[in-house]
Image (cartoon, rainbow, N blue to C red):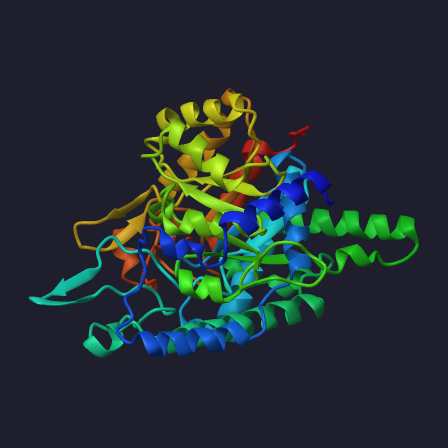
Length: 462
Ligand code: PEP
Ligand code: CO
């Protein structure tokens, strides 16, 4: 869908005052400091010549799906690790994460009666924003760990050095992850008629097992019924699409993968389908917003509790000047205690300005807490309360909540408290694996999908 007028405006705008490197003239935040600039330049030159990870066709197809979600015709399920690590680029971890997302989407499709857009926080989610540049332990201060794309987690001077070679390794690990996900999906792993492919070892012992089984059986019956009517297997059930997203934090990396492609105008970030701007890097005059305004991908921004309606409207003007369907997703992450007071004025301002972003709720990042023991966790009850309230707040404002953004894993970890198995503080020590934020485990993720269905199930949105 090409709109000639938008096309000519955008070309003029890009040529006049935007380039993949124009972010370099703005204030940078959360960027690694590379001691050896020449080493960085060499690594970036190499990265620049490596093939991209995704294509412009896929990016534009996703943009259309997100436009549908903004209008209530689809639901966005975005999820994955807080941060991937290079060591976790392994077959079981990738396929288990995929299984959870597929199971959740099956629950959502069944309950919401809407197609689901699946977007992973993976194949490039290797960089993390940090609250301080330095970390001090026992009187020793070293640069903070910024994710495997930048440095190592071990508390040694060597590991914490920002290493440009990690940019190349990050690209390679992202490509391996993408390749495996694509191969699984093309090979029939996501076939809706075979949900048993997505079973995880402990599913049958889960308190949610019966409810999930009933949905699987109901879907199986409807698919068989439709195929009987059609008189042949329906190929559209054999595969689902999967897209990737990450926090596009390390600007040099993103710039090196920003490309022009034949028969398309403008620039695409070809490191991922759907990059987002984190809450700490969303300053209107900062380097991230400058970079994002010029790429053609659908983009998202995390909106935290300190954003004012006026700031939000200015941000939307810069990032989506043409009110282009599917272009902009606003991911609010307020916290269960704040969402009911902070979100309504933002929704009202955006609505009365005639803006139609895709609204998505991240019920994770506003609900992080540190226990007396020093462990970082999130309470399931707060996560589910924020999500539940998000639907109500949007309902009251006359806007539409079209997606959810979650940190989750297919592993049986114990990082968030509560959920169907009522995890308590003493359980956390058992299987706490995250080096960054606490994630929902398999059961807690499925429970969130069921909660969404209970909240929205059966409601058809126009
Ligand atoms: C994240 O998504 O891991 C994150 C750091 O989120 P936010 O930018 O919303 O704090
Ligand atoms: Co996180």
